[in-house]
Length: 355
Image (cartoon, rainbow, N blue to C red):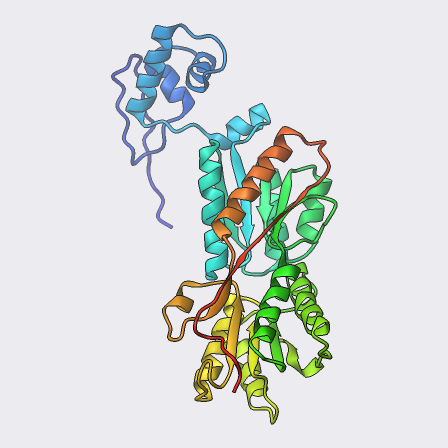
């Protein structure tokens, strides 16, 4: 890296100070010198905390604006022990679900005067733990996360940092959470397929260790049981988290001698893999196989036929998480609460009665 020869800057008193933005950022000390007051007076004038004569306050603010001074938010929070930032950890921003969730958090946080610090951990438990440790070190007011293990939530609980688990829970009863009623909604989807006349219904699931996968598979199995249909192990297929994995699994599933007449994909990524597998095999939807997705995605209403999907209001999910976090910040001793949101099934052209 090239070394820069930077000449020290002389600081005249008075409001006419000019600074070269190429050299460095203005500091509180620069503003104080420009306004001809002490740093403590400058700090009070800019923060609005403590008395400063009105004409001095205006002079300080004018100097700060002229210099392009930006307060050091981290230093301010360290001094006051109060932060106006919310840490947000999501699993994969390439997935529209997490992007919409972050948008919901950002919008509601902004309404309440908070900023969002967003980290995409790409499903890495190690990166997730490192991110929450960084949030604690910078005195973040609270954390909203879609956890991939219990470690991050446990660490925040031990550090007494307000947190909200979203979409799935690893610490039920120990911290707040905002989720959808996965079990009930998955049961309703399965009942929809049963009502159309399907009896051999498969489910592609990412995993069953997380509450999302466990609850969605439980709802599916309960609906089959209520209809008097035995669970067929070969029809409940764990495929991992990638569309390619779902595509390969769906090809195997749909080339069985007794293939299913309907397939329920447990999230939008798996639904993408399922759609591609159906295309690979030259099957017609819904004539040859009906498909349903838990989670809607923009492409599902653009293809023909459209994909029947469970539509979560993910932006509202993010906003509700902020509401719960701010309630926790206001009342740290309140017992943990789990907020359960509903979702709706959007019938489109991908489901019909079997042949």
